[in-house]
Length: 82
Image (cartoon, rainbow, N blue to C red; front, side, top):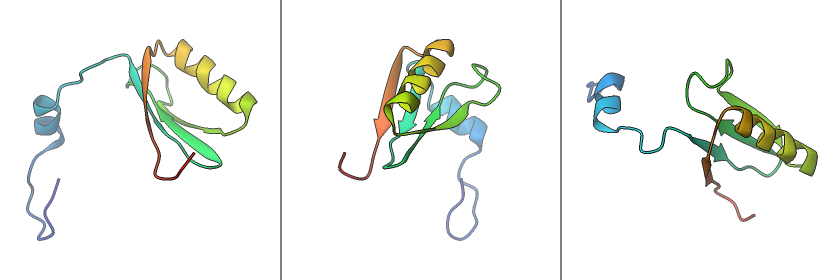
């Protein structure tokens, strides 16, 4: 991470050491109006970040993928009203 002046604050490794994972079986979902971006822990899938549409069939595909990746809980983030 860098300041606006370009000074390095912390390396990725330092951030990883300071911020340990609280739940190794969690995924993150960025909820959008037309598309949702989902990230699972590294090593669970060759493509750990995927996008899914917002229709029911897309949500079922997302749920199947999360189950296949052994995800037990999700965190959702949205900036709009849904």
